[in-house]
Amino acid sequence: GCMMSLCCDHRVITSNGTLGLNEVQLGIPVPKYWAALMAKVIGHKAAEKLLLTGKMVGAAEAKTLGMVDAVVDKDGLLPAAEKVMAQLVRLPPTAVAATKANLRADFCQEWSKYYLTESIGGPPPVALRIA
Image (cartoon, rainbow, N blue to C red; front, top):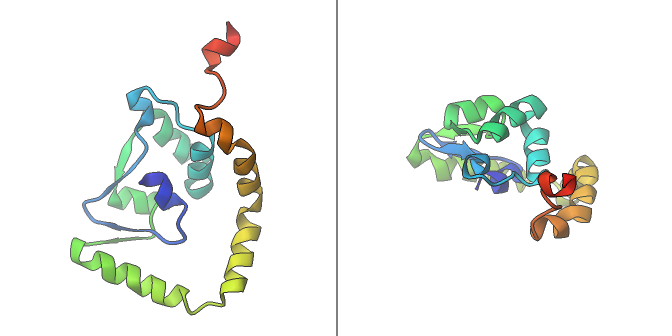
């Protein structure tokens, strides 16, 4: 859920929600482009701190970090999302799409080159490459 949300244009979370990637705590390396996307959204230092510890953050901290745009109570979630959507759908779609493409082009091109390798487990672990 965390990475899917970071791909979104606008993110709203309930006040009791949590967000993060705990892969490292489970012994799973965070995929290269998941790490890159998080760093792009919240900055390298903050992403490094979260990813290397597998820390999950609460809604308030997620907002402070820039992982979400708004924190609302449970009953306010759908209305908050609908309000943002109503504003966004009024914008000229071709201008929005072209601007998004310009903002994300480098990242998307790099990800496109690597996603197949990553989807089958990524490159060999460092220990295997050293041996």
